Length: 121
Image 1: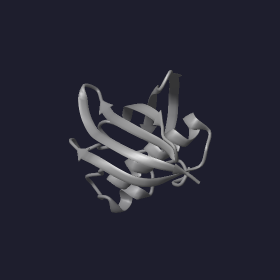
Image 2: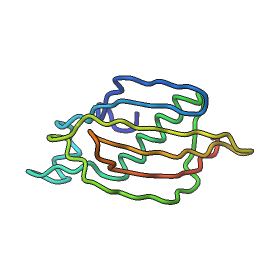
Image 3: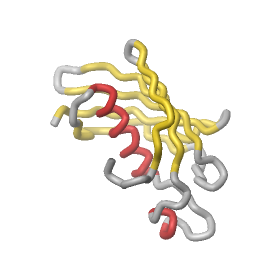
Image 4: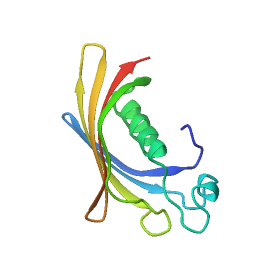
């Protein structure tokens, strides 16, 4: 984990090429002291890192993010109000790595949509 104690994986289920992860963001993490004090917002780059780390865990390989498309941050993830997230990852193998399509939600709100290509390190 790149950011120690930034999030906890509560559940990870994998079936065929789709995975669902339930995670909880640590509202007390040092990241939120600077992003932003009094009104914490989960940085988009941290969400992208979580997707990478979950993908690595699922495929059991070290990955490098080669490219991302359709990156859409659709709602603010405030760890004090909505720390519990559900991430759906559709993973397909390519010649050089994996293509991952992600949807991240809290409650019934879509917070992030992302399509990314990972190379195997």
